[in-house]
Image 1 (tube, helix red, strand yellow):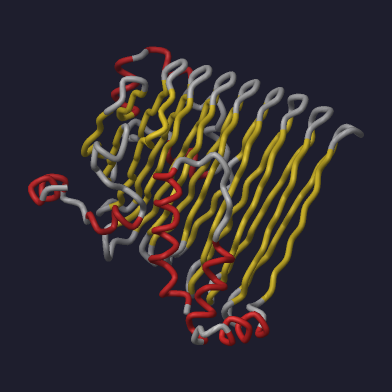
Image 2 (tube, one colour):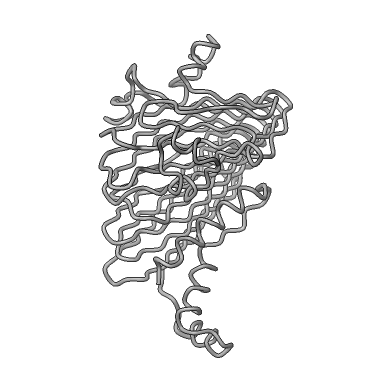
Length: 366
């Protein structure tokens, strides 16, 4: 990225790099950058994908309005109602039918000076398409405020969509995403959520609705440092035969509070779901509260969950030290291994962005 381009955008590009945003068309198939309520830049570098602001999409396509509030309820809570205003902005990303967009589209939501950033995003993966998105959400150093992000995802028949969201906020920011996903017959949706830096509050609970033979995977890696409260989880409603869901979370508390939720509803026959929540306590002052829920409405469903919270085992540290590592190196290796989640089918650029984010956060956990 050139210095001239950086000055033109007027954002802290180091903060953008922390959340995987490159602003480099050679590494992305599209880009979008929203500062407060203003679209700073957007572009598509691949003919099979459309990227623009939601305001521009509403002007270009009359049918876009049919996707607004189709999955989310504008009266869900005070935050959805507050974001239901004329000045709301956000991104519109669409993979055209049959398009295979392996190189990720990037979308950055940047809170610079506004007291509240109100966002409504629409993502559509049309029939038999493949789309990968990396969304980096961050704030300008020293800013205080709230981010309200509404997102509605539509995965059409036999389409595949992977969505990796990396958050890096200031310790004074409150973040309240509201997300819903509809996955049509044979479609799949992979969600990866990474939060490793201090934040005042995050409260999010995305819900996926699955039709016949659809699949959803929710992965999350969360670190709560002192002063941070993270109330995070995922819900999957399996309402089509042979649909499946997997929810995997890794939570680390170093003085902060984590509520790790998970809910799978078997609302059709022959569905499968699994919840896995693991917590690691690195401080006596923190809290991890795991709340797994399974709900079956038919006898022939397979739903399971496992949850475990603990500290780093001394014998693991001693073993690694016996292999030549220092205590800090051994601790770092254990923490790094705990945060790693194997995500099948994820393109290399998204894997690299996740790995890079975890590497940058390691030093704060020792």
